[in-house]
Amino acid sequence: MPYITVRGVEHYYEWVKQPSGDLVKPVMVFIHGWAGSARYWRSTANALSDQFDCLLYDLRGFGRSQGKPTVVQATESVVEAESNQEKYQAVQELTYEIEEYAEDLAVLLDELQLGRVYINAHSMGASVATLFFNLYPQRVERGILTCSGIFEYDEKAFTAFHKFGGYVVKFRPKWLGKIPFADRMFMARFLHRPIPKGERQAFLEDFLVADYDTALGTIFTSVSKAQAELMPQEFAKLQVPTLLVAGEYDQIIPADMGRQAAALNDKVEFVVIPDTAHFPMLEDAPTYLRRVREFLQIPTPELQVS
View 1 (cartoon, rainbow, N blue to C red):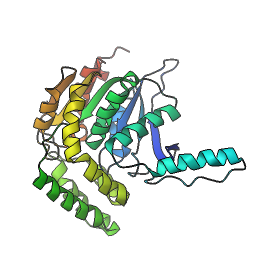
View 2: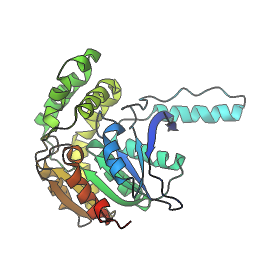
View 3: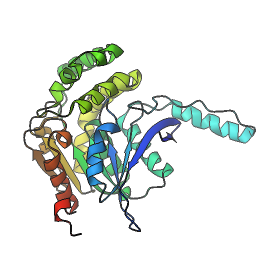
View 4: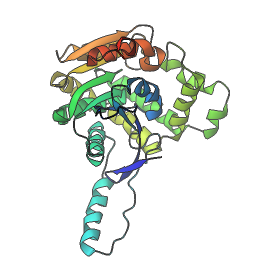
């Protein structure tokens, strides 16, 4: 499995490509949500690999990526040792703020020598992408935000959410994945339509292996007063053409949150996928892909001329 060091932390990544002869295809980067991994983007990436070289990676602390910096190895050069020590001290100060994950993405693209890309991001990953769009607009051709939006701060509700989230993160016995129908119960709140059992099991597995500090830390940073105040500003100043996709029955990030975000900027196109919830790309892949292809102005496979 391919890994790459990003700001001192080992990150998992993979490419989904189709042979294109001498044609150089643009790159689409996929970003997953909280406690997930790049695994759930594979079917979407496979479907779009006729037009894009698709890059999938696991966010720091989730999936197969490390949550902590790699220990710096000793070197013979005193200058190199001092330089490495400075880098090590810097990465040790990494936080779980969404902005930090946007910077992780910038370094990942640098390490892979990628310039201007397309980005398709989901849930918490969509918040990472939104910040990245504004920090590095010159590096993004077009963006797709799936299940994202803005929300109002409610101290009582946020406190209750953090308390419950902390309990959920703490109580994650590995044997939970072996209980019959545990995957179905785990995903019930996220779905309106059924998805394959293998996909449900992968979600549960990713949740169970997520780094404890990362899972807990990102609960507090992604759902916070600061984030509630920041995201409307970020959506309002977007210059990157963006498609915001919502699931009609999404209980995690209701469609109205996405609609409110899109209303702040005419660069954002908003669509709702009927009869889906928090994973429209899996619950109704044909409709999701059609909407994405329309936004990107690329033909559907059925319309392509051989």
